[in-house]
View (cartoon, rainbow, N blue to C red):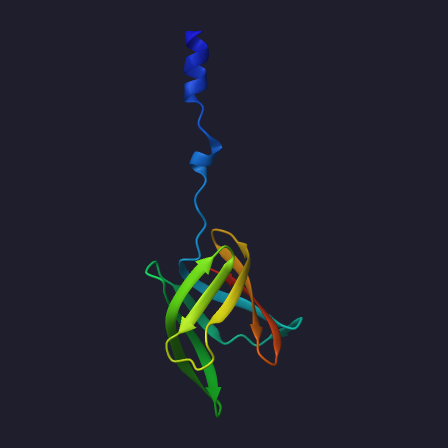
Amino acid sequence: MLIGLLIFSSCSNSDDNETELSVIGGWTVDESILNGEVVTNQSVIRLLTADNRTEFRYLIDIEGNLELRIEQGDWTMIGNVLTIDFDNSDFGPKVYTVTDLQSSSMKWESEISGEGTLKEFLTR
């Protein structure tokens, strides 16, 4: 009976080895698909911090010159819905549905008014 107790107590629960997946961190957009077609990706990085702030850095083409733009705001996540309220946006909160989250990759979708569904594939 003592041997059985020792064997049972030495086994660990598999849940102990699992790490909680989180959107917090720096993400690079590897691919963007708008309405099923790959679009040119000029994203540099998406940063989601533990204090619920976000920073989107991207390059924009202005008359043939690439210029770095930075958008900042607050983010919240309920279930798989990530909502970002950008500081200087007149468009209101931006909603992303996280469709897949792994330790080093994430997929999310968002609706772009008048354009359709944007799917982005990100890695860290």
